[in-house]
Length: 450
Image (cartoon, rainbow, N blue to C red; front, top):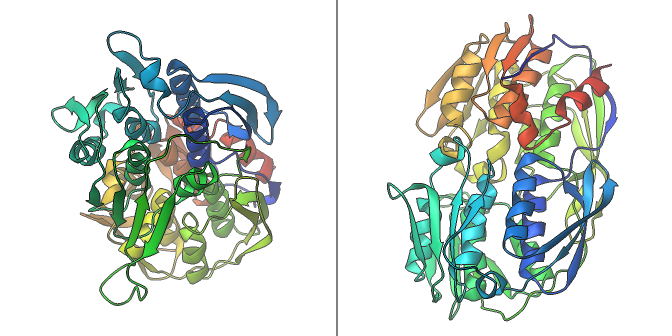
């Protein structure tokens, strides 16, 4: 286990393009493999999680060729095997697929495999992934006729046996882009239309990419006035298709990775940075609104669209005083990966910052409510856990100390940012966890503080 010490740091200055988007990279590899023909993917994230996805689609029969590096990632050519390819190429017995620590892969891939004409697959991973529930995809897939089973009815390994699927109507109890994506993949192979209602809009990368590949997906907002009765429910419908054909994809910079530098710049005096060509998909950038409410000097420049349809831009952030805010359930799906950073911001803000409706945090790489609250409390924060979130009373700063990553990449990077903003610095144990999504994090952070 590696140990690294951070801060208290100098101001962050300069420009950085964050690493390619992890969520979009996972989906690009899977959808390219589901299609027919060759797909060029530029700036695919080169990290442990996304390497697991490449290994999985190769094991299923897709051709994967690396063509060099660009913008912090790798350029790929993926030869698809077709929507029903894994079943046609399935060997005898059960094929083992190692997902490593990639929760996105674990929850998306079963949707494609479940409706195959033949074959059986077992998805398993590291010790952390074995603690992450998969009943949230197993149960709705079962309602479509899928043959799926998991340990103790809810945990990996997850075994999928090919079975004919039928369309079904799903009302998700919690907005989850991973569950939604799994069911969209299954719907492509089902007999009849599949309907998914999510209680609030979650990230929409899968819908955008499947549409670009030729799938028929409709989206309808069911509640146009979010203040009346809760967050705006959204209904998606997907019809079965025979083939997919994805064109070239250029993966933008990952907003969730950029968020660590944005928060560091907001907290460390004298900071002024540019985060270039970052993905600014509205279903991902809830933190921008939260930072704006808190009074941080932050704005977006140079807006455009990358090949594949994803919006991109340059995010400018400077240091400034912060005021407390409240994050409720409606904002959680579009801020889910950045909520630990909201807890850190709350330590420096004037007043009490509250996050509610975020039960989903308990099902990430760690129980992020428990680990974030314990980690920041150990650094001097006045913070308490709640069943669906946390409350932070701003004290103007953090003392510093030691923080354990618990194998969670976002907790490791949170500790680094906390160290820069703290009075005494922070020692992070298990810093190697950052490589799951951002292998170059420490070097990029050093580049902005040198």
